[in-house]
Image 1 (cartoon, each protein chain N blue to C red):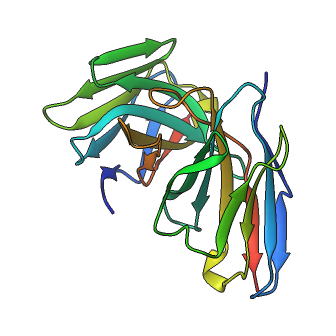
Image 2: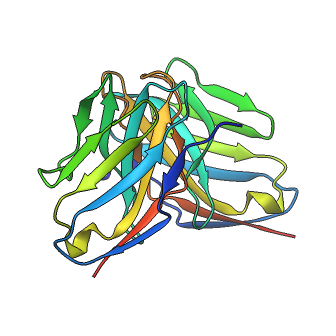
Image 3: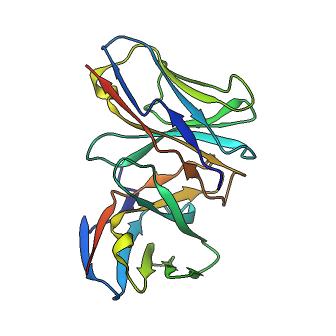
Length: 114
Length: 113
C-alpha cells in the first residue's frame, strides 16, 4: 500500500539554525500539505501546495517558513531560523484531489530546537 | 481557535461493546468531515469521512453520523477491539478552503479486554 514517507524521523537543532524537513508524498497525489503538532496540542495546518504553488497558508506560516517541490517526488519544508517554539511534530500529508478527498499523513518528523 | 471540539479527552470501553466518539463544530462553512486514528509516534491514519450531503457513512465496523442542524458528528465503532485503542481525531474542511483540515483536540480511546 502506498504511503507518505518523511525524513528524518527526529531532528535536533540549535536556535537560529536552518532546518529542512523532507517528505515523499504518494506518487499519484497532486495536493501536498504540512501540519504540525506541538506537544499536548492540536494538529495545526501550516500550508497547502498544488501545481507548484502555495494554495493556502496559516498565520503560523510566516516568512521563516518556505515549501518547495524540488523534483517530481520530494516535498520539503524549510525553516530558515528556528525558534524554541518551533519544536513540534511536523506531519506531511498528500491527497489525490482537492476538495472532498482524504489526506494521507506521513509518520512525522520530531523537531527539537535547543 | 475552537472551530472543532472533542469534549471528551478520554473514553474507556469494554472489548466487544460499542465505542462512540463525539465531535462538535462551529463553522457552518464546513462541509466535509473526517476521522483519523493516531498511535504514538505515528502520523494520523485516515478512518472514514462524510460529506455534508449525507447523514451517515459506514465502512465495516466504523460508522460516522452527521447532524448538520446540531453541528455534531459521531464515530461509532462496533464491536470494539483492543487494536482500536488509540487517539481519535475529528477533522473538518470547508469547500473552497484549499483543503485545509481543522482538527479537534482528540479523544484517547482505551479498549479493555
